[in-house]
Image (cartoon, rainbow, N blue to C red; front, side, top):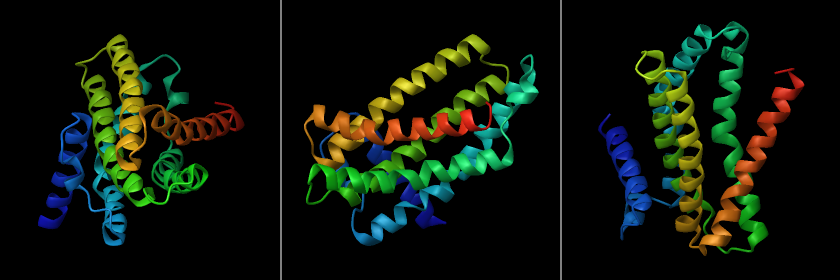
Length: 194
């Protein structure tokens, strides 16, 4: 339990330090082979936040006219969670190879995993505020739009910092996984008629 708390504390502190452009933010991340593997524990650590997000989203969607049809099934939720964690390492590997970088793959995945951990908690908070009646539909829409902008910034900063790239190239590198992810989500939604 103490190792889990130490990992979460280090990962989240590292993300906040990175986003604040603080010197020494890299010290919070173990990019060795063991650290790379251990960073995937974030999948387990973030699961309660993801479940809360799905339950809150379904609660909010159920309140909308025709919302019963828009609810997220357990199968869809499992697929989304798997996609969130499994797609990025594959694409990141290809991007690193495409850019001809000698290193950076491990660092990019480690920092990305902790960024996703933080982002899932932020998104869960927004949906929870709506489910609790604290945020109405308009406020939720604004928060989710803000989240998408924040998400882009976080992924850009992760790529820039972990790969040590110029901001323009880092923006491109960060967008490749996001665009592929969006195309996959759109493709599945179109295929299922949603």
